[in-house]
Image (cartoon, rainbow, N blue to C red; front, side):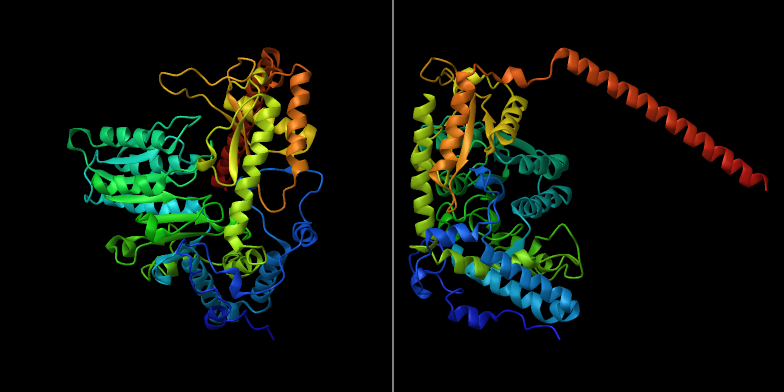
Length: 506
């Protein structure tokens, strides 16, 4: 006999999961609602003991983290499904998803649980919104040539989705060329206004603006509420905020932000296992009922929350443990607000420590940082391409056991020289460091020392580039492999032809 599913929504509400925190900033349940001892440093280490202790992991931003207690809850859901799939499907799944959606609705200040859908990740949420925009072009509701606006630093998958869905359907895509390093929110707002004017040139309609809340690479907190307000003033039809990194890093109150669509991952900074995100829509918006999940199931037409709640047989367990993630958060002093504040303070402190050691600077002021910050690398490392950045990142991982993303800054602020380090070398490479509750100072010191060692040894990124001889040899190998494949295909076709002819003769 299968065990009972976790408690229903009523029990969750009694635990404080279905209520706002009373602070008006959409950060989830108040810690006071679940009084217990504040988590200790030893307990934090135990919760993340499954992390590779040999690696300085200063890259929470890419994949997030999940504590052992939440993983244990996820495993219980998985076993429940495997023990009796039919009972799980008909009696446990939707009830559990509703409880998670209610917890998210409370955490983000949504007006109603019906406004929240759970999806795998922010990329899926983007596909849902952009698919509708593409249909609007295809079905004649939008005119060919109408504009879609996006930031230059939009996440790569989202940029490609914009081109795959709406540009292909006939949209004109206009990019906002944001400066980096960035000095202030005003600089971002000015560039956004200028790009919006370009998008509206000649009387063109701007059908959709896609705005990041926190850009991924380079990482910058965008003044999203101000940009949404500008869109309203300028007659932009709809605003989609891609906030993949936001919940757990910055305050999220969807009603205050005022976008039509808002998505954020719960597995990056909110301690859920991968992969789970939410997409918020406004219940009074007629477009909300026209959104559909790209994977069509028997739930098609029953509303996006239901469509997203069943896309075929799969593992839904990550979407079922949001309440347990909130329980974990509330073990910390100040709950998610306290975690966020301490992470911000620590990442700025560590960023400044690195910048001082390397003679560089932060890529944006602290007020435009959350729990991630960009730090310039010494210019003498000579990062001159995205490939250089990736090769240096790989070297840091393999040779120094440091995991950190590296960004190549190919863009220059118009009218300004490339920013330089203390030795006068242009800074073209940046590390993006994260701080999460499991990080310690030694993680950042290992990164500092690794880069200092490279500088002392006279290392440059060019030393990792394949030589001309190596590239030529590689091309010869590719050509030889291509020739061998062609011969094999020819022989295979000949063999099939002979067999077919033989069969016909019989």
